[in-house]
Image (cartoon, rainbow, N blue to C red; front, side):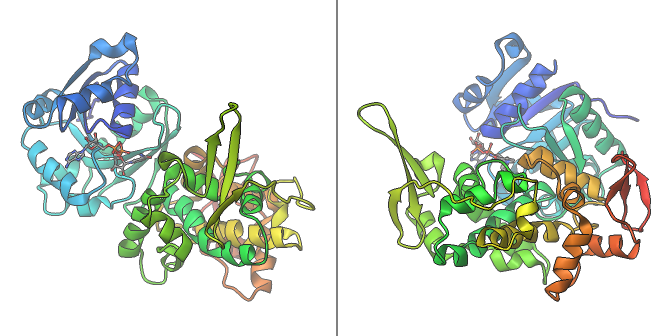
Length: 427
Ligand SMILES: NC(=O)c1ccc[n+]([C@@H]2O[C@H](COP(=O)([O-])OP(=O)(O)OC[C@H]3O[C@@H](n4cnc5c(N)ncnc54)[C@H](O)[C@@H]3O)[C@@H](O)[C@H]2O)c1
């Protein structure tokens, strides 16, 4: 029996639930939006376009939960707390109809922790459907099956995501933070630590952000600007989740806690844009102009924003990593370190490099995914640099070297190198 998704019940109508509800209504689905209170659900439903508003019904978890029995997909998007999610799923399970599919939009809690102890019907019908914020804009849709999720359920989600919601579907494995956040958060959390010696050697935070932006194909927010956008509180939760769930020996374990100054920022609520101040802040002056300041992580005081120093930084994509300068060393250490980390995660987080490249481009807006970028800068140069440092090659670079291959993709990108050392057609 194939599963059809033509109606969606969204549980939790905050930032993500409202976006998922709005996108589903825009795709022509009947949508039920429930939250703790009617007011919260109504607020979420305000994200729905006027022209599709007639498709949406709202309500609350106490009075209206039984209405989910009339919907094909039950999509949970409540707070990121495993016990709260499990409690809600326990109430939902007896109320949903046979043949419906069910999912969590968690950012990183493994599905096995959510579904542990649930019965067979739940376990075969549940998956993680991980959208990125803002839902209507971001293309990435990570799809994660559990151990017992049936193939037809995954097919239904993949088809709905691609065809109805126009998303880029990425198939991830049930590991902490899935693909996008595993690599993206490694960049951010390791970056906070690895940038410190450069700051001590007089590099400005503005320069750190500028080097870790366009020169390596990342958005202009770089490192600190990106964390300001996401929020130190979110990064703190991510770090705690990684600390519990990463396997022993994982390089990410060294960076699950903030350095001292960043921890003190978190403690006093200096969280980023949502709090009005993070690593930077913008003040509107009486004359209407804006004053930009940077929170100096060494003195732990505010100072005026200063222009970054990009002198001698090449503009060719990724070339900075091979430059003999402090900026070059920073780029190699932080960004090159992230590429090396990504190259070590097949098959742990995904079966192939294509899903990783797609996840990072669609979820973090990198110009190229990690493996596409390695191809662009020359895998041989990266291998030489790693070996010159006496370090071990990450798994996929070792596969490439053993296969005597110059690149991860060939035939104009239509074929990719797999873990078996062979090229396969790119899906
Ligand atoms: N915001 C993001 O960038 C983002 C991206 C991807 C995934 N996620 C995940 O999506 C989920 C929702 O995140 P969000 O950013 O929309 O959060 P949010 O805070 O905007 O919304 C959370 C919703 O949960 C409801 N809620 C609060 N306490 C509850 C309780 N005890 N029981 C049931 N519902 C309760 C709130 O009323 C609210 O509608 C989380 O699992 C989060 O990790 C967030």
